[in-house]
Length: 381
Ligand SMILES: NC(=O)c1ccc[n+]([C@@H]2O[C@H](COP(=O)([O-])OP(=O)(O)OC[C@H]3O[C@@H](n4cnc5c(N)ncnc54)[C@H](O)[C@@H]3O)[C@@H](O)[C@H]2O)c1
View 1 (tube, rainbow, N blue to C red):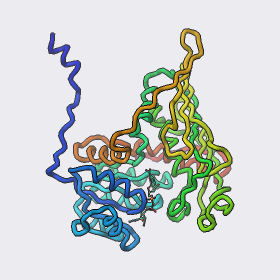
View 2: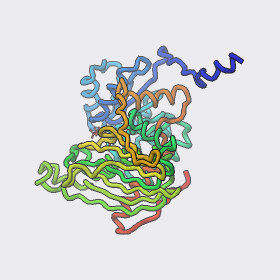
View 3: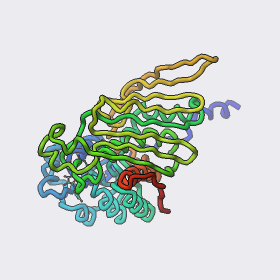
């Protein structure tokens, strides 16, 4: 009897200890800005060694390693993802290239038996994402999409609240976020390298916040809009960047999902309002307001408010803000990927979920080009 009672307090799964003797051999493809965040996180892990780096720009990977304070004699450098994959025995790679080469680098790594942590957005088009998923399925390897706001404690709360049933059946979501002025530069603003603008870059976070919370229902139709009134305008952007700018800086969409939920979506790198607004989730028994941030990067900008009728009274409760993850979100994102590879765990941010996010982004872009609502069709993987 006592055993039976005590067993209720025994965790179902005891975490295996990390074997620090066998180092996890890691490579990074694309050694630009965000690769630094991956490298900083990997530096905190005793059981991981970065053995190879690749960047298309000759010398860039070597400079990156030196700036990280790494021993360059222990690292191999390449100027293409193919050479890196062909010449190294790797347990995993981070694909930190600009969006336009996400698919080709990831497919090549998976086809050669290497696990992949792929930076967001998943890809540029749905077609590319489907090709990546097919390669992943064939390979049996781990693919995780690098959407680190998922690891944030307050983001997890959103999902927990929806799943608790406090909101009843969720039927309408308005996505907020976006920026009054926050146009990036470098490789983010040209189709050749970025493929898409704000829609993919920060839209992916806004969509994941709510899709993940409501269990990733399949998107059915979308009516999309996109524009670029700020990026190419030297009045609002650096004149040199304005000349190169050929992606969107604003997008909106109305999306119908399986199960009768609709999403009213808006995102911007620039517009004439301080923020497009808070994210709101409306359910039959309650609602949640998630404040935006000034420069949207995918996490709640302050305390969330939960609205409910209690004993016939319309009440609202400000929820406590939870603390940051102690080692940071990039640590969590890289660690969860490596643990999935090491211990045969499911992918922490699986492509099977993010394909819906990509399908919506792709749908908004295509619908905007066509000027009408379209069906979202996701081919069999
Ligand atoms: N998760 C986040 O918070 C976050 C933040 C910023 C950027 N990102 C994402 O990270 C990616 C990279 O962004 P960035 O700011 O580091 O860009 P970046 O332009 O600074 O770096 C990308 C690098 O990839 C290299 N590259 C491209 N194709 C390659 C290939 N086939 N083989 C080897 N190298 C290749 C380029 O030469 C470049 O140096 C983008 O997809 C972006 O959306 C994510």
